[in-house]
Length: 462
Image (cartoon, rainbow, N blue to C red):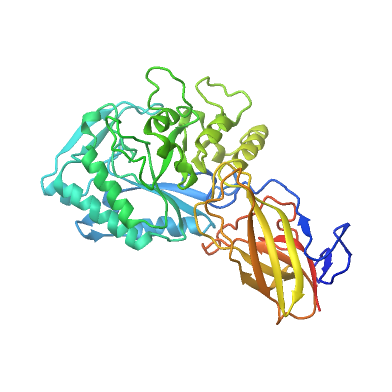
């Protein structure tokens, strides 16, 4: 039988985990920091087996437009499928971006578009530090054939992959250098607001479940970027902890928090309903977690996370071998604070009546952001570390914000067919990805009796 603290469902006082309780009495549950590799949050490496370097639940990669788009209505999904399957084979979910221009890379623009007359500008890109300058090929984003291709591609991408459990988030990409929605310093080569709106409209129509993130917040008065503050996209800050916090200095107007404020209240509140991600600036990789970072430009990581409400961040530094132990320890402490952290402060379990058991579980969010997927909880009766009976719960996690009062999940479980005996009542939130990392609660009894399950207390079925 399972190792449990017994709660007998009769109207008498009985000992439970060292103190006395009666039926329907609220049972406090102890807090303990949650897992660093909780799903859909935390640090993200480039696609590779980095499981031995730093705990994580997602992997990122780019794909060139030409690898998938072979004609106006012709697509080869094999490269994307290979990336998704490889990432999922490690129990991780994928982040990806499709790009049309990249310094030093050729053959990104599909030949059929060039053949049909689209102009391509070749120029020397110098904003590549610490890498040397490189040739880049920028398509004419105003070309009607390219615009047609982009819209049909996004529609096809959404039809095939929206809601695919192998995917965590998608960054919109497609426009600008690295798909980052700029062609700096040649701003004149970037897509017009009309084209930007067409791309956003296409993503809006194609994706209803999988979150899509844009590189820059933009309001009505933004000179280069089409307004997106009122659109249902997240954002990704790709110079995180370097150009994140507002400085007020001339030339820093593009910093994320400055741009967010200039975009208006709708953009500032975006984190409440849509995810915020990004990439730690390359010169801050790993170093951002040092007690006193050597580069003065590195901004305080915790302040950046709290200001942006970031859920995930790419960082190649922490996935290099032989990181200093103190850096790893600080990184783990800080990464736990990213995104959501769900804690169950208490549970109330009723008496077994007419073959049913009532459960009210309180859930609070101690993180900096909500959870953005409608994953469903599941209750179970555990015996010898195995679930002998499970029930799908009615509770939800979405839109539970940090600082909100605890949300109460109330369910009635049918225990009429359960064999007489002693069990542990537990709860979990399964990951829809087969073999995917389970969500773990910030409780001391998480995984205490069975992997993936939060133990709520012992019960006796008679």
